[in-house]
Length: 78
Image (cartoon, one colour):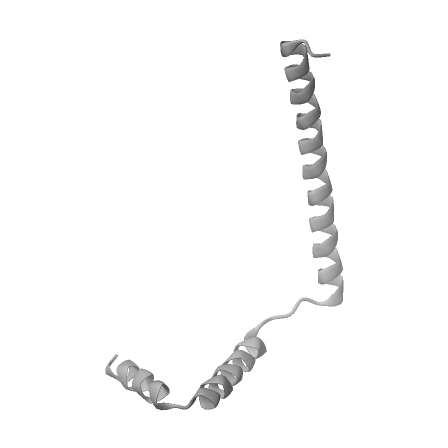
């Protein structure tokens, strides 16, 4: 725990470009840890998302139509 304060103090002493360079190295190190999906998984996930969005859009459109008709029937503007 005592080492954390020292690491932050050392980082604060770095120059602007050194901090950017350190940040980029850390980002690259984290990206190497990522488990990327295979092409088949990516296509499957994309298909699932598209189907889900289409179903939700259909439900919202149906509810919009039903409530719109209800409001028009209630207030008699049609």
